[in-house]
Amino acid sequence: MKRYIIVIFIFLAIQVQSQELFRPSHSIKVDMGLPASQGNKPYKFIMQGLFNVSTYYQYSLPFGLNFGAGGNFNYFTINEFRIPGMVSGGIATLGGFGKLGYERFFTPKIATDFGVKFGYSYSFSNNTRTKELIGKAHTYDAPYIEPMVNLYLMADEQNGFSLSVGYVFRGVKFNETHLMIDEITGYEPKDFGGITHFLIVGFGYTYYIGKKSQTTN
Image 1 (tube, rainbow, N blue to C red):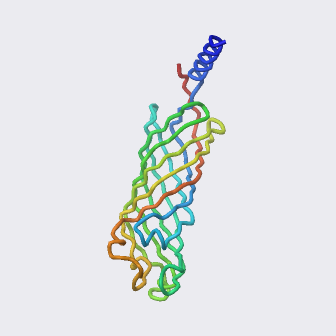
Image 2 (cartoon, rainbow, N blue to C red; image 1 turned 180 degrees about the horizontal axis):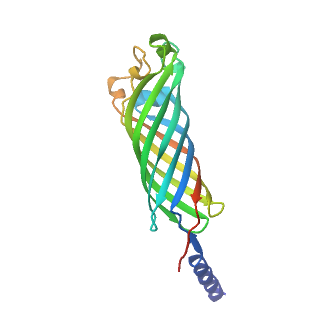
Image 3 (cartoon, rainbow, N blue to C red; image 1 turned 120 degrees about the vertical axis):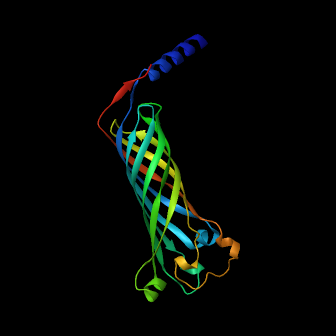
């Protein structure tokens, strides 16, 4: 009995290895997720992530290394119960990025894409205070970097859906000036020291342009 099981296992392994694996060169990707603020401490407790969306073009070399470029947009609302004066509103951030990564197809249906996005972004803080003081959104900018990973399930050779996870580090220290308020009470000076960073968990869609298959042995 054990002998038959071993033979069946070897047969299945050979079948998997000999399948035609899709090796795409060009693709258009869209990632959508819910951002969760982490730090610094005031940012974590005052700002609440509403949504994050990235869309980009990606070119992959035959051995899996890929390069991409695109844009990103996210929005965080203000928890008005955690700052004085009942300030309401939010911060919208628009940015552009390049991407370097590695994509691997384990089977014709399952693939992973590990990578890092690096770019520059502009924030538009629009709330009751900015409207009172300057009559428009207060803006500021900063570079950012985002390690990310996608786990893909292919619907066919040209359409894939994924679970996406990313973590953004943005080179700006959140403080009261970003909301244009006088002060944020209840925090020590050291609490404002860390840079802005947040977790993104969501879903993605990929459209692979053209068809290019390769048989593995």
